[in-house]
Length: 322
Image (cartoon, rainbow, N blue to C red; front, top):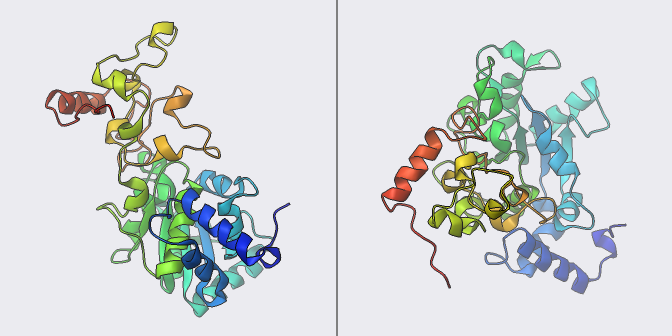
């Protein structure tokens, strides 16, 4: 059973904060004392509203599947999740009243999962209201707005459907939005971003697509264990050939050289594995092209041709042995 913070000694609490900083990729930015101060100060723990638009609830499943005891789950205990349609006990008018009261208070963190339909509002209605209107309404007094998952960040799978789903940024023009793509969102990315906000009261440094550079500043290809085979142009063509077992998956549709995320070093499922090590090509779910522009996902296509052209031009240098 996870201990509450109130039962931890100061020494154990600082140890936890140091471990959390390392796990969330913040150890080079903040000391354990800085994170401890942010988590201990009630005034610095804003309430959180989590909205779900056109989604499969994958990001929510990622949220509630964090293993205990883990830094992300413990930090969640210190954040007030006021509204989340899937996991909250309240429903109907009672749930909506909580959201409305939190909006009036202001200063909350808004997390949005899922895309917003642009073809017709009726494709996504919540409580009889268009989700687009709810997102705009809920964003007006937010201290920070975070789009989690590929759908909210860039439109994702719904963009390629008749609903013509669009990212959160399209319905909130002019608003500062932190995008945390991948399908689903990685909880380290979300918790690390929230802790960064609690400590500094501002967003982390972002790239041109609104993604935190501390998580999306490198390509999946950079640290892929199949990278050497890419350099030697040893591309897997036959899944059943033992010789090709660890060869590069580019010809099976891998988008790794164009996908920017730390999957190959942070990994998934409590740090156990990630797509490429599991034998599947990177689908580029951290990028705006996912998924319609990156189809077919498991075969060569325009992205493969583009990557090979960059390689031939020397734009993807060989990895030097160290």
